[in-house]
Image 1 (cartoon, helix red, strand yellow):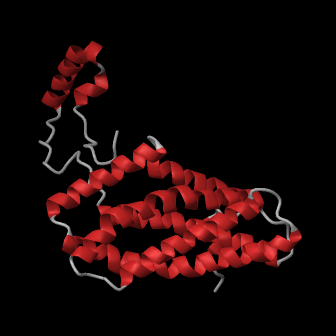
Image 2: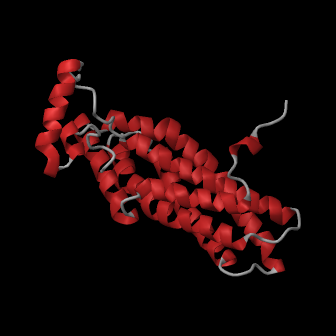
Image 3: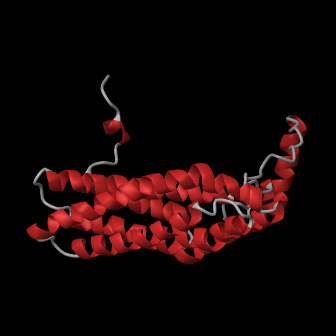
Length: 238
């Protein structure tokens, strides 16, 4: 079931079509003994995921891959073996989920509407340029981690991952706090709702039924491989 469809289903559906009549009779008897309040219009319905929320939670995936890059940098700087496979998998998620999906949504549906409305006209070109530079860096990271990284290539890998982190931390922060909130000012309510469905349809077309949840699972698997999944380890001792 899609995340924006109604969650509450008639009780009769849980009984199965073959025993629908019997279930109904049993339900009536139970209702007679214990009256059930009539449901309110709000009950059994799922709150829609808005377009800004969709984009912001995708930024959460990006943030988690940045943590994977940071762990790779830490290990290389400590003289440890390059975790090429986990870094390659993380960069692959950046390429397919962030660059080829998330950023395409922004460039097709968000940025043009802002520019047309005369909003953030200085910011949008910078964001687009950063998307392009990010794809260059991702290509380098993918190439460097496609096989065991030679000793001489380690420093370049660190430089490229660090440059990616340095650019995308302020990039996504500016979008979350300025760009995405401005969407409500330039997109009429009806189109806003339609855009939410467009985003979801595209998500499942590209990533299957699991969609966003499946991608989050892939990121978690990489974190577990690197030993950075347990959230408690990031809590400081004070």
